[in-house]
Image (cartoon, rainbow, N blue to C red; front, side, top):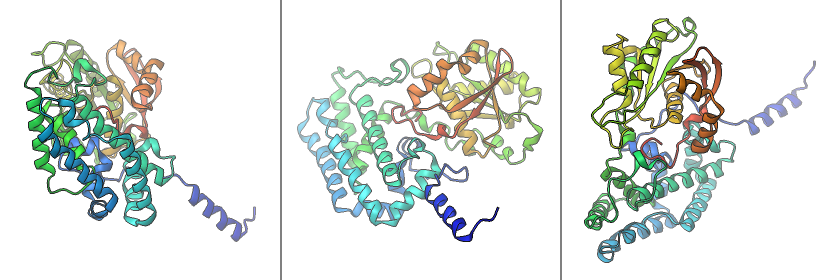
Length: 418
């Protein structure tokens, strides 16, 4: 069929206009001073860490007013709040009006500054951290990313200063009782420390964000930063091996072993955790995949010192004789939903062939739960999306799954594993 040059050019032009950009496996995340910050508040981290963007944001007249206002709230709280805990933090959080006005200003800056446009094009979209908003216009994606981080900051302050309920109170609750008579003194000292942290910073979000980070810290909830950077620490030997793999030699890319936290404080690994590892080790020795992923953080019981993934790796190496270079630790997941999500994230970030199927290998009950509609519904309810697609069932203890790029989306109300 003959295609006229003008028509062909027009079709190409239209395709470019309506093309949707997607996350890029070659993208490297920008790091903040702490992984807790960059994992929870990636948009704010970009505003802070990209020099050209930071300069625009810190010198903008409207946004500078917000920065001054928040610091003044913090300073006045030290003079006026006394024993009223709520007085210390309520005005530090972003109000609905502030969130709206800041969003409006960022959208205006997008229209006039190429640096802000580049932030969306070169960071927000390829990072995948705000992937749930990819169908929005760039301006609205910018606004939504800001709104998500503002909600995340507010949530951390509400839970870890204000005593609000986290999603899973039995394992994620604050360390302190708000009725403790010394609690106002602790919050005064926390506020005073934040004032020292931010006194020379001019970014509009720095006071609330730092307040949230200190609240997470004093509650010993810095779990999002555990073992980071993992590719240089706990996963170094496995990570270095990835580039040497001939993927055509394997049917699956990884065998995922979801954790099972013990309920006894001095127990490092639960009986079910051992059984899950043993079952999965047999599958690895059969050559189904070059790697195993052990997934589970410091979740059960409350404030445990043991990490499920680390203890499973020890068991696999010491008891099942699996070489360390074949084991990838995912030491942050706190639920089965995030076992699946965090495994998918690691596969994407580590450069695995993302379209290749994986398998879960675990005990019978959990294996069927993972492939059940109830699990998919739970993912959508708790995460806002499903991070994987089910494949074939292979046995009572193994089933295929396909990781989805939706897994890169940050979860704003889970500060220990966002």
